[in-house]
Length: 271
Ligand SMILES: NC(=O)C1=CN([C@@H]2O[C@H](COP(=O)(O)OP(=O)(O)OC[C@H]3O[C@@H](n4cnc5c(N)ncnc54)[C@H](O)[C@@H]3O)[C@@H](O)[C@H]2O)C=CC1
Ligand SMILES: O=C([O-])CC(=O)C(=O)O
Image (cartoon, rainbow, N blue to C red; front, side, top):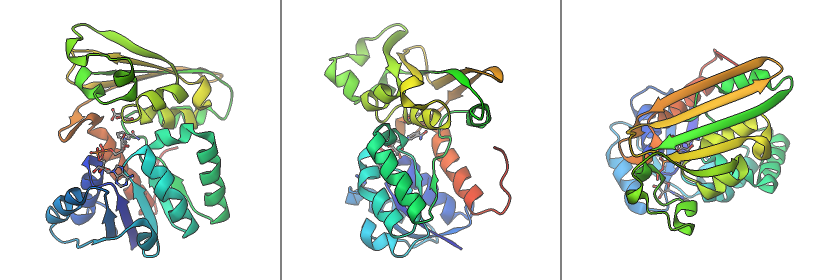
């Protein structure tokens, strides 16, 4: 059975561990880790049958087949190279880290040299199947428009740097327009989806991102428009925010769980 280790015991990490505990994912939960000890203990006490060890990345990667990162962009730098050097496959949620081309190339080379896979779930967006197919030929443009309730953008470096008072926003307001590369640095915990979209399509510089604070919303909306040799498509998703983390959509942990189910299943469905 697939032996899994999880770094990050927050909203997504907890959902993944519970899915293994409930048998929704056919795998063994070998170890978990979080820099916040309380989060580790809280997660452990919520499990019924799994008894994961608490191990740091060095010890964890000796005992697992697959490392799941669901922590932060910073954690991608800290744990992914270590896991790949230990011949573990990895699944990354904080995909925004890959706006750093040097990191992306390092991880790609490590994965190739150690014969490992790097999985990146679709997260909170729909339409990656279409853009992957479209990218076989020329894609002219990719645009992501993300709308969140203002509170869902709290803590973003862009908001803090520009002294944006989110609680004073009383109408739909475009906060940011730029490349995906700029977007994932300005909003590291809000638009990792822009990074995944860039990797599937035309890259971080050409993918355009617009981020809108909309006080009329209770949901996180991601709208993607792609134009290319195939024609044009638009996808739109209205996500319910995760109850324990309003920045993240509920579909994100579901997508992580679906990817792990795919990895542990002989049938591979869809592009
Ligand atoms: N790819 C996608 O579509 C999506 C990606 N995300 C990203 O996935 C990651 C996890 O999201 P959530 O579970 O909602 O966040 P969360 O804030 O609920 O949990 C993150 C946990 O990771 C821990 N952590 C952070 N940095 C760490 C490090 N360097 N080492 C060890 N532990 C560390 C924190 O203490 C926290 O317990 C975030 O980076 C988030 O931005 C979130 C939603 C969608
Ligand atoms: O969950 C979402 O709506 C998107 C998100 O936070 C991310 O991509 O980081």
